[in-house]
Length: 171
Image (tube, rainbow, N blue to C red):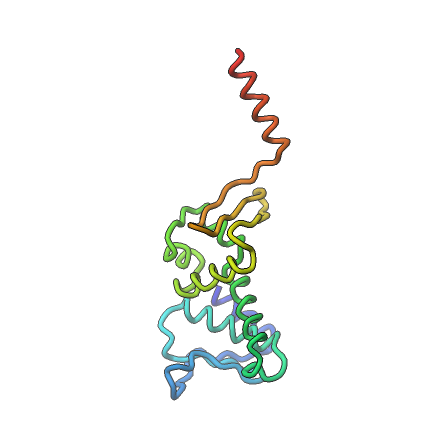
């Protein structure tokens, strides 16, 4: 994903400085005009991906002084969750066998803390259960008490299943 984000920045005419020596260790990334700088102190590709995605969202979607607009920062954060994780990503990770938060984070290529933040965001936005459409079908994604996925069964499918079960038991 990190490479895709670098390609997107290039396509949008944005220069990315990947290892900038910021004076403060608290500054992990910064966007100014058509340049994004990432701190040389970022340790992992997962963290670098999240920071690049955030700065890229600021560069392409934000207008004005975002430092004074907490709503703009909140909207940007939601876009980052949706780009890097997404409900479909949660379903795919669950279907791939992920059970623990660190497994989901590793599968999705994000830091565990970011994954947990995204999960809380999704619970606030969608509740504890939501439907997710994939090419493979419709799934129910349960976000609490643990992440679980079930294939949704249409009522017409249930009727066919019960008819088949009755035929098998009567013979």
